[in-house]
Picture 1 (cartoon, rainbow, N blue to C red):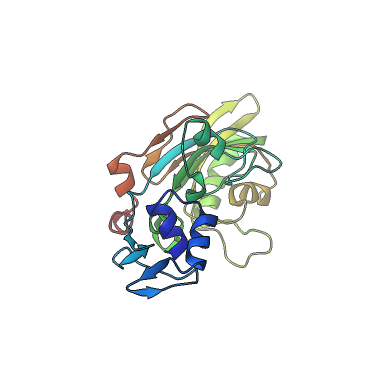
Picture 2: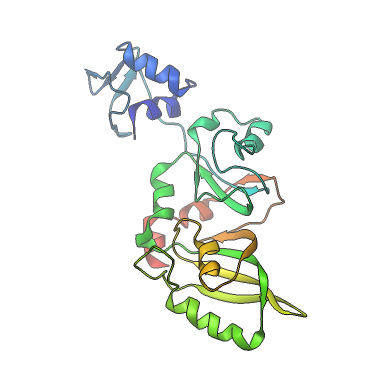
Length: 247
């Protein structure tokens, strides 16, 4: 962990304040004055700020139901940041939090938010093939007679424009069938390529009109839109290296 982040996670200082303390030679690591905020430190190191020892507070793990037209970022842009939901709930120091698995502004659903970088790395690390399930609304309904062929095609991998490798096997399931055919599906993927779901359907000549993430790994969205909650211990532990290696 970076030294400035360690200070933020063990004090009430902002990142800028932490950097200022480091720059004024107020921080030592194992008895050595450190002046570089990006210095990597470990929680087992002896880290002092103005002579007082620092220790990390417990990490935070939560889910949030992302509304439409919000940004997967810590700051506002063309749309408001999802972090406003936490700020309005009285959360402090949201600058320390990061989103694990971002969603586009026009995509809704499950977001995982934490200040534990090692935990979130386990989720996005392609080595562990952490599954993500999406509910997809399509522009063009698919005839039931053609759907099984698409199921097999997605299971074998889809060729995306500009990429040499096929997508990893994905699971396609019908959700609803209208008069014109199947217009809503579930798609479960094990990767996180850029705009992957939208590009997969574009590659077969269709278009995604609505996209909603329902689950990541063993964690399923179960709260109303615009709400958040802490993850249970079992949910947090489902993303440990040991558990992901078993799945």
